[in-house]
Amino acid sequence: MKINVHAGHNPDGKPGSGVTGLIRESTEARKVSAEVIRQLRQSGHTVYDCTVDNGSGQRDVLKKIVAACNAHTVDLDVAIHFNAGASDPAGNGRSTGTEAYVYRLTGGAAAYAKRVCGEIAGLGFTNRGVKANQGLYVLKHTKAPAMLIECCFVDDKDDVNLYRAETMATAIVNGITGRVTGGSGGSETTLYRVQAGTFRVRENAIAMQSRLKEAGFEAVVTSERQE
Ligand SMILES: [Zn+2]
View 1 (tube, rainbow, N blue to C red):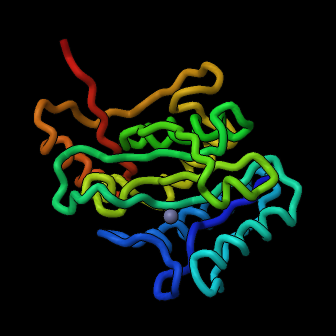
View 2 (cartoon, rainbow, N blue to C red):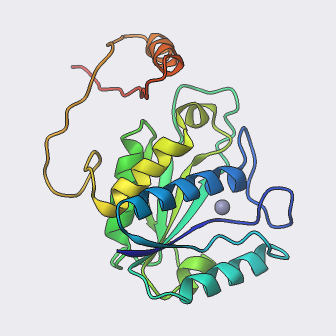
C-alpha cells in the first residue's frame, strides 16, 4: 500500500499544539506516528510522513498537512490524534477509550477505521467506534480516503495507564494492514493468548499487570462478564 501518515497539530510549545492532560497530544501523536511509519515501512509499504512541525498556527498546520498529503497519490491518509474531555485524572477504573473519524461511513476509509478501533480496543481501551464527520479539515480536503484516529484520552488516568506508544502503533498498523485480526473485522483466524491470572477484583488484575510490565512483558487487562 501507499499511505500518508501524520501526527496532528504543531509540536508542544508552539502555537496550534494539541490537547494536554496527564500526557500531551502533540508529543505522543508524534511518537505513535513515527512508530506506525517505521512498522509500515518495515512491512514493505510506501509511507509518506506528512507531519508538520513549522505551522504558524492551527489553521496553517492543517493547510500544510493537507498540501503534504495531496502531493502524493496514496491509498489512505492516516491522521493520529489524542482526545480530551474525559476529566478523569484520578482514574475511575474505566477506559474512556478510542474512536476514529471518517468523512463518510460508506467511504473507502471506514473499513480501515473500524479495524483500527477494534485493534486498539484489543489493548483494553473502550471502543467508541467510527464516526462520520464532514467538518474536520483534514478529512474534508484530502484526496485519498482518510481517517483520523483519536488514540485515547490524555486526561483519563485509566487510558494513560493502558497507553504505550509502541503497542498503540502496532494496533494501528494491524488495523491498516489486517496483519493480525485481534479486533473486530477482517478474516477469520485463530489467536492464542497467554494468560497470567484471573481475578474477581480489578485492582488485583491491575497489580498483576504492573508486575508483568515491570518484568518487561506487555500486559493488558481485559474483562468478561460471568453469568
Ligand atoms: Zn487533535
